Every structure is written in C-alpha cells, then in structure tokens.
Length: 226
Image 1 (cartoon, one colour):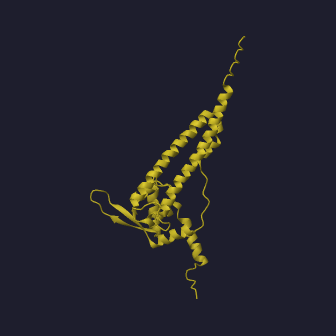
Image 2 (cartoon, rainbow, N blue to C red; image 1 turned 90 degrees about the horizontal axis):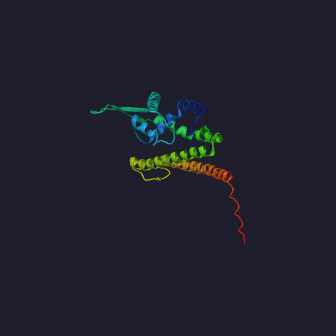
Image 3 (cartoon, helix red, strand yellow; image 1 turned 90 degrees about the vertical axis):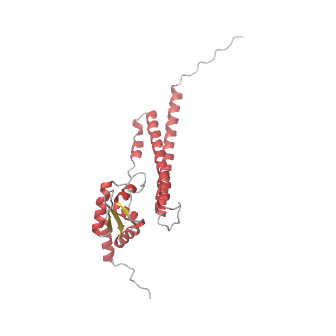
C-alpha cells in the first residue's frame, strides 16, 4: 500500500504560499547562491552586480538587509570569522528550512515577468530624430552591447576557474544553472544585436535614398557635330 505521507494538506500548501509571499525575489536569489556553498555577504554582493550577475542585480546594502531577514526567519545562519589584519566577517549558510523554502519556490509556478526595455522605448520614438541621428544612437547601442558580451565572456571563464568546473556541466550538476543563465544572457545580447543591426540597415537605406533624391541630375551630354 502506497503511503500518502509525502502529500501536503491544503493548510500546509497555504502556509507555504504565505511564506513565499513574505520573501522577496532577491531572497530566493541569495538562497540559491548559498545552496551552492557558504559565502560572506561581500562575496554575495560581488555576485549580485555586473558583470557577474545576469539574473537579479542588487545593491550591497540591500543584500545585507535581506540576509538579516532570512536569518531572522531561520532560512540562513551565519558564523563569525575572527580576522587579525582585517575586519571580522560573517559566513552565511543555508539551513534545512531555507533549502525547503528554496525548493518549494522553484517548484511553484512562475509569474509573468514585467516588460521594461528602455531601448525599445527609444526605438519607438526614433522618428523624432533625423535618420542620421537615429543611426548614431543605434550604432552606439550596438557597440555597448558588444562590450557587455565581452564582459559575459570574461565571466564565463572566471566562473569556471572559481568553481573548478568545465562548462557545460551535466544537467544535474549544481553549476548547470549558472552555466545556463550565463548562456541565456549572452544569447539574449546576440539576439538584440541582430535587431539593432536590422534597424541600422533600414536607416542606412533611408539615408542612401535621401542622398539619391538630393543628388543633382547629370546634364545630358552635348551631341557632337559631324
């Protein structure tokens, strides 16, 4: 006879949902980092800003505030490390309760992501510029995006060295998600460049057409007398 002990009651499901609602997304992001290994707040802050983070950016002060809330909720704990030549530091560890909360959050259905693409809004208003001005804006965006891709490539190599892993790892490996998110970030940038370059091509065609219209027609050649 199969046991039903693994099934959760409606009350347990409701309590889990309430717990999820109390934790901000950055909290789950931090717990996901800690699930890979113990880290200090400083180490977490390095991983939560560019160029090392492509999922959820956060400021240094915000990270420590959320870590304190997670510790208060029992999702993380910390140990104090005494240092002679440097300030003492806290090393954070994900608790069993935190692992359960993280797992429950990952299993939970996703929510729609807000669409906030600043450059797309600029593109919607490119008509307010001359074609030459618009082309300059788009080309600057392309150059910046290639710079970002270079930063992603650097992080790709750094992540392998730091975690002593070769990408791509097996899908069941703890670092597969890191590899997948870095790959996603790069793929999205490359897709964006294709779009930018398409816009640039339209603008170049418009400029070439304008030049053709403004060019003075050539005078007919004089017929030579026999």
